[in-house]
Length: 132
Image (cartoon, rainbow, N blue to C red; front, side, top):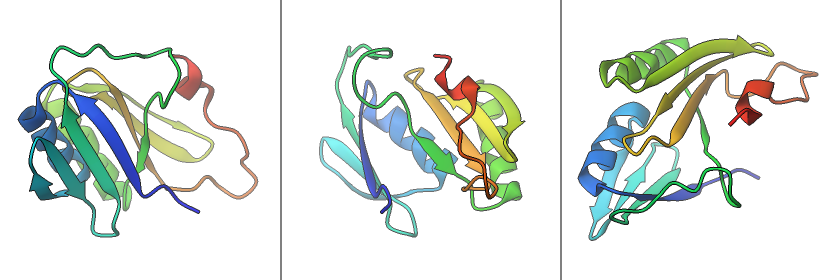
């Protein structure tokens, strides 16, 4: 079982589309009031504009998604992308996983990790992931 799609409400569709296409290297499939972004392996990210919306951090629902880089060089590219947009928060390692943390244009937290899976025997997520 794996997650294949995520739907996000954003304030500015074109701004968020540009951000996620650049950071996650997704291709734009279609846009008609929403943007459907696809990865080479079929993962979908749907962005829907909702002007003036507030981020409901701390309420029910998905808090944020954690994306997996293809390799260490891809993780470094993501870190540099975030730094270039003043969206980088921190970079750290935990349980043999390197993690780059940033914020999207609406200040929604975004995490990118490498490798995608923890080392054999690791059964806990980083405590930092749950500090928000």
